[in-house]
Image 1 (cartoon, rainbow, N blue to C red):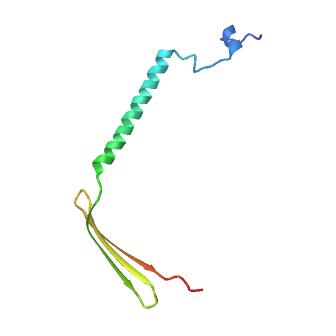
Image 2 (cartoon, rainbow, N blue to C red; image 1 turned 120 degrees about the horizontal axis):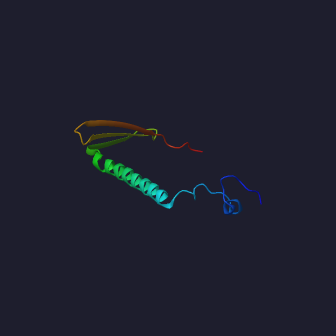
Image 3 (spheres, rainbow, N blue to C red; image 1 turned 90 degrees about the horizontal axis):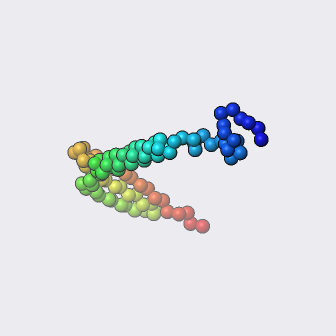
Length: 102
């Protein structure tokens, strides 16, 4: 069996594992720090979602009209208010044409 510099006979037979050569106390301490950092980051992310809040819908109106050729036109008006008091008005128009007859 070849003799490698800096390694014992057991290391040469079993293989050299640099991670296993770290003292167990230092390895466990490093893992605990990673777990703590991960838990703090996840908690901060969840808390930010809870504090932001959602927009509140103040009013909504829908108006539909059908033309002579069967086309349906729908108008939707929505007013929302964000947690900081900003009011947003949104207006959507959708047009649906009937399917072609075979």
